[in-house]
Amino acid sequence: MKLSKLFQHHPDQRGYTLLFAVLTAALVLAVAVFILGVSRKQYELSVAARNSTYSFYAADSGIDCAALAYTNGDIATSSGATVTCYNQILTSSFAAVSSGFPSFLSNAVYPVYKTQQVSGSYLNFALYSGCFDLTIYDGYDTSGVHWTVIDSRGYNFCATVGGLPNSPDTSNPATVERALRLGKQG
Image (cartoon, rainbow, N blue to C red; front, side, top):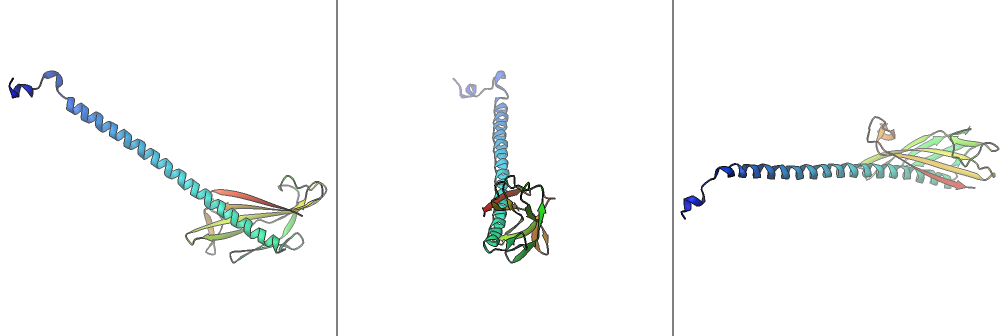
């Protein structure tokens, strides 16, 4: 058999190489699009987890500041609250409230007092800044036991006032809020 007859093209085999190349390119493109989609979703999830963590850290910083003020005796319904956090002095006076307090406190027999919301900021590794809002409740439960309840809401993105972040940036859709509550009996 002659060598030229082996490599002779038959009419029913034309375009096979082109079809194989197109199918291979389509398969490679589909795999690339899938990998890109998974990578994008992983990136979005990691950003959301980071923002949530920063907000939690901010709320925790607020709780730490208020707990220190409580330990120092700076929180009292008669004199208001003076909380010093990260070289900021956060001052607020208490006022009696009849709603919006934690459910286990009762004003049916005993009054519940609440500070005005006080805001503060913290700096984390000098690369990131967050802020928190503190709300401090002081009152009694239904059995007459005294409670001080501190609510701290932390935010990852904050608006700045005087060069320091002190309130949540509500215009940023990536702003995340995390809250912590600390209750002290007695």
